[in-house]
Length: 142
Image (cartoon, rainbow, N blue to C red; front, side, top):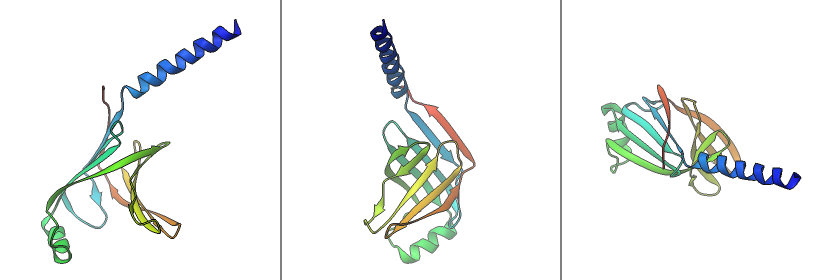
């Protein structure tokens, strides 16, 4: 009898895990205001099923001119893609930089604040980089 209960619990566990993975989340953060730059459009799409973040943005004229002075390759309208991974309620972009110095964006589910994590020689710093007006969460059927 005890062995049958274990089998039933195991099947229930498998059923719920399959159901949970069949509907990965997509999180959209829109109307994001950056603390350093101004944008006409600044939005983030986090596709947890594909482990992908897509950021679409358009600089306003003032910010575009400021960055164009130091970077001739800059575009006024751009899209940026980064791989993402989750750790509990947090979502991290892939690390950009070298092992001794790197940055990554940090999102929290249902939170309009986007942080940037900076690591220099194993010293971590977390700073707010942007605040978004709207956070939407969708379940995507696969």
